[in-house]
Image (cartoon, rainbow over all chains, first blue to last red; front, side):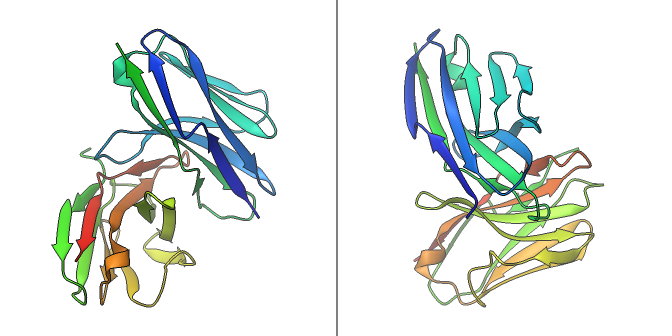
Length: 111
Length: 112
């Protein structure tokens, strides 16, 4: 069965303290891995798409990487405004245009 | 573009009542998705449409749920009759040509 698992469930960082969020997946065939950010009371907001192992994407303090079994979202020198829930999702071979989401990592960055 | 627009933002109803959630996708997007988000189960796909045609409704929990897309700029998700376990946040999303889904702000449904 296709599965997407995110860890940790929650993470508390001090401002400037870099860390990584993990998204591991067990799927029959990966057609894309997506990272989203969700703020309280809002819908998920697209961050990155990764398609093949070794691929990396960057945006401000965020960098997403992909291997054959997992993806990492690296946060460098985070700020309080980076506090949010980060969701990863996969699109799989034979799954049409469906995205299967992980349960997310709730990140809080404190001053 | 104003993005994906959902209404209402909040809905409180009593068990047994009919509930209709509405969505206006981003113009030009040919895929529309309905999701449900709960603390226990996270974000789950209910149904999606391509060019107004339902493609996959395997995530619709039961016959009480139905969805329609009468034209490219409007979709509804209906629950009849509603039950307390239907309480959740319901999201609509539309997809662009690069396979990126853009989400609305959601409808928070409370069934008492």
